[in-house]
Image (cartoon, rainbow, N blue to C red):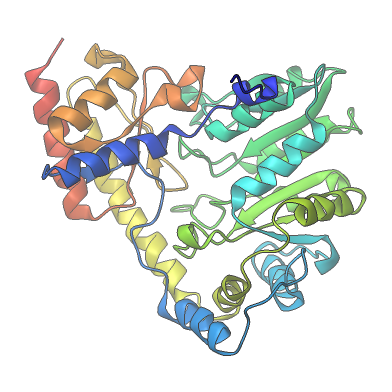
Length: 393
């Protein structure tokens, strides 16, 4: 018997970081010593007060459905946090609690993607952007993210890609996979240029918004009231509070789109896990020193990673300004990026991700996550150096 599926499902891609993780775990189960610098998740445990809030919620009987939009206390806390961090006023009636950051991408792209439409997205960028755009039948149009621009997007180049078929622009700063942070002057230029395209929606992925280093400023698009009526803001708890497995995210929607997003929630996941929502509430309203300590540790590791990569033969790496990724240039090694990533895992015991897994412009680069211990990072860099010297082109 032949099963016939809708052709759009054949267009769905995936996030290869999970394939690398599976292979790394398989090798480790065989007894091989593997250092994983591939997967993008903090190596810190979820802070204890957050865990205890979930346990208390379970013991208090928080076992049933909640509103599809999230518990009111959590939506209000999100607004208070945005006011505190970003000095923006958001109504709880525009906040949707969702099971992970990817859900916001899914909803936004589904709303605006259809055959004949174009959606702009970062390249290199998070692979799910392109995957979902292609699933809807829309045309994915890459916004080049270039090393010579410190892996920030160029407002001028982005605006030049817009035409009458463009329905949605996706921006990401601080950025995965490159660690770039787009400066205020570029975001100002983008917003000013968007006045010529009043019907064009924007999705701003700011999941790494609290992870910048030194004097680098995170500039949120929520701070621009002139685009509030068409901005979809993506954020969550996964990275900031080391809660990747809790699947807790949120989005802020324009008033005209919020009810559409709410209906999608009702039709797909009903509501987010109830005790996890109380844990997320504790994260926002409890002590924030856990965030500062984690980011400080990432900053120390970032310096070790950059210095170590620049000492490797054929490798150069600019300093990432946000998130917890380095995106070194490996063009002088003589290797293609995915071939090098595969060889490093199989032969050197170091898991990294090949740049092409994040887009066409990722060739010539690999992504390393420094969400691992400093000792492991140093050992991994030593293994990579030994491999490159042994296999020098």
